[in-house]
Image (cartoon, rainbow, N blue to C red):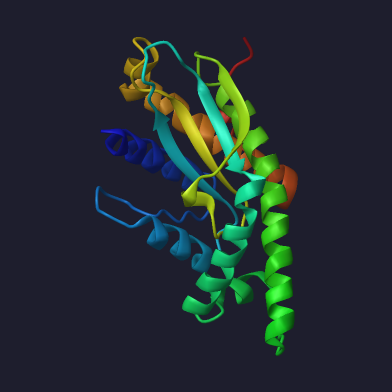
Length: 219
């Protein structure tokens, strides 16, 4: 039942970001089926500034706990790069036009520029993952498992910084009830929203104001 809780957290994150005057795109707003390919391609075609995929972890044995953030593993770069080109063709060049404002006629030049855009997105994904991990540490009482690289299909083929955010372990005897409680989902959604806003402030929009309501009190 992971999707029930991740959707609730995502909707809470969306509301917090909208309160901060951030335009939000979601792959789903209710419990409805969307293929992995559809979610990735639509996010790329929408021209989003960043992409955060929210997940809840599970372990074969009871014990592991804590949140973690992941950016795309280097060995998956080539597949992701080729998928970007495929999606750009599928959406009639919209991935390119969202990223490059001037007109480019040469298809070869377009492909080179798309590769550079993809490369920069992967570099920025590392920064986003670290910033998100630090923000979640302020709101999750169960510690962090760190920032890692992963071969995740949901972040392949995107021309913008993209990460997977594992908010904790559903089958941990203490963390699981926290994640599924209103208090826990509120806390985790605030951490994710703070991470997004901090990234945008540090890497994209220095004029962006982070609401004081998202800054936790000093312990």
